[in-house]
Image (cartoon, rainbow, N blue to C red):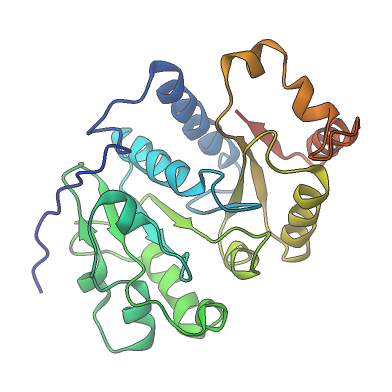
Length: 264
């Protein structure tokens, strides 16, 4: 099956609607930090998740993938939020066969890889929403899929992929992201300051640790100039109940001790 180039029309794409200079620079910094993390142990597969919905994990996944592609890395973005897939909706295309069709049926892998109008940027959408997302991510065929896209020559890519990014469901809601993160080289946790409290963030971190995930760092999303000016004092000193706490400082300090970077 010959794959035709698919035009991305959504304005969240870097190539369609330019990000603000600070935002674009932030993605470049994030990209660079990830590559530095892979100096010793190569980082090729990344799970991106959040604590709760609407923290910006899909936006982060898309723009980071495009930033990687713009840097010359052959990058594949896979929608593994099998309950509420957002990538195809965000980028403006629907009713495409995707990862679930490949896992559950005898479909050639290259038939679900979509080339985009952005050089080096490829997408595998979710496909049909399955009745058993958690079980699907735990199958041997899904593990084989990760191995194939990580190491084999792909015709549509005309070579091997350099980076594979998995947009996963919020870990505060379902366990899917923990299952996925255990199979990838690293995981990024997207957190929206003033929205997620310490307790939930700590629970999510513990779930990732129990899955033996390699936590690359935290992406603080939707922060303002005022947040930057105050050094996130509100975020570090208060939880959602308004009670003062220093627990987020301790959380960040512990992450440093664990050699996990915090990306902003």
